[in-house]
Length: 186
Image (cartoon, rainbow, N blue to C red; front, side, top):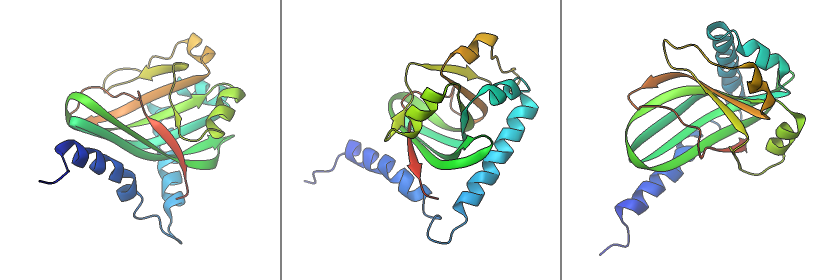
């Protein structure tokens, strides 16, 4: 009898997500250009659909823009996306985001999210850590279709503000809980 179980296979499949997503990023690829183009489009969309994010953009010391997060779950789920860290409007690094979860879930969805670093300390902690994961010091702001983004004036008091928008798919809700960010070379 084989030592492999359904659980082993599921975790192996989730571990392979980043490898599969990176297949088009070999030497000489235009991976960085593609990510930057998607980041630009995401920022433009966010500012057009949610004008109050202009204020957050201007007040932040940096933004991690993840244009497309793909989340899939059937008992065991996973999330993957790639994006760019912008400081003063310029890309300084590229990042991937991954998460795995277990629970009562069925479906798939895609969404965008932006992390606004409101303090230099929060940005420095993010940039100098290995495998940074969201913590308790994050203020979450969600928007679904037909709903306006709610970012109150006290939102800017949090060191990091996470905005999730553009949800599409068959899975209920989006969560950044447990998402891990790693620097990549596109």
